[in-house]
Image 1 (cartoon, rainbow over the protein chains, first blue to last red):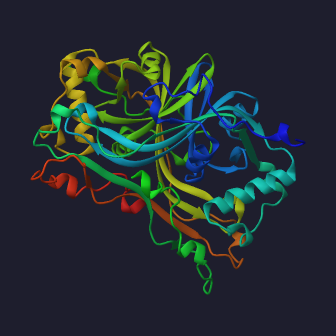
Image 2 (spheres, rainbow over the protein chains, first blue to last red):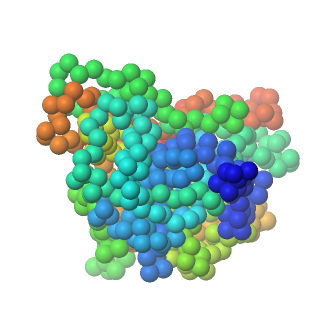
Image 3 (cartoon, each protein chain N blue to C red):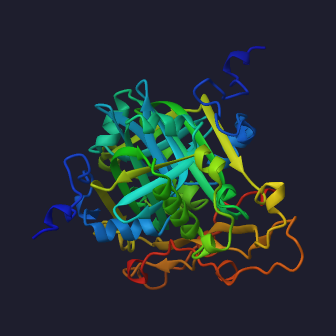
Length: 232
Length: 232
């Protein structure tokens, strides 16, 4: 087929992204990886300088088969990455405390994605604006329509990087504690405390001009990070 | 004074941990760094293998001036780190979406800590048990008293690593959007959507024996990640 060469491979698994510990928790299909990515907006970016790893939190968003993040052109992290350094981007959602009868089986319910690759600067101005539009709309759907778009100076001062999602893994732990059979009889309570991100009532800026109403998408904001109800 | 040499330096700042972008957001005192660390339980650990950085989420806890994490002795990450590789441990709390009038000033309210150092395996058995006690109690206060402690085989299968907190930085963004003065007059709503971790009702394990009550510390669990009310 004509577009066959443009199709992305189904599996994102590689020797480097294969889950080593508890392989049953690993997933490598785009659908699962994208579901976890699309539920978050802060990632942890890993890179090395002179052999020292650094892990920096930053906001991100996904558009098609790339993950984007951005910042100032003066950022050490971004200039380091834009020069082609290998990068690891990790996204984690914490879903619960897993409280077992034994210390050994205490755990965390979570969903995480690890992406390996290289970050490429988005230089084309239209692509950069489209990426920033996707960023703003990932925070609050439709917000780009309401706000002032970046001017030429702001665009120049903003570095946007994208990482093609080609080599990745998802890792998921869900469900109750898994105690050793002989511990079940102990008189110890076991179970899960579910954790999730929650949003409070939006707070208008102190310098907001009178008469400006809070948009419904802000007033009704719901965090995106909740897992499917089936995974609790 | 006799114990002067044991005192920790007040500042955790170094050339490598100094906050480059927006230095006003950086903090280097133990009090602030520990406050942020003690509000969380999942960190992102960064290390490099053959020049490729990896960032792996894992549970952690602080005890005195060290940060601890643990896992299986079969873990690639832990064996790599126990061999003395440089490590970066990052903890992040997301406190809100900052919605400005301009795309450029959209931001996130957050508190994060970045620690650089080396991970040292905890080999002494008593120290290891004490560290695991601190881990379990960091999940639910007092829980260690209720559960079955690790046996010899479990202790042997568990690697506990500690990172001495000597070189670190905290970075904090808080408060409303900071728009350019000429944008204030735009008819655009601006403000903050507060975000926080919330806990649902605990779910008893399906194989829980009848008559075992949920401990009050579980039933009344409150997430620790909320910032001081003053920082919202």
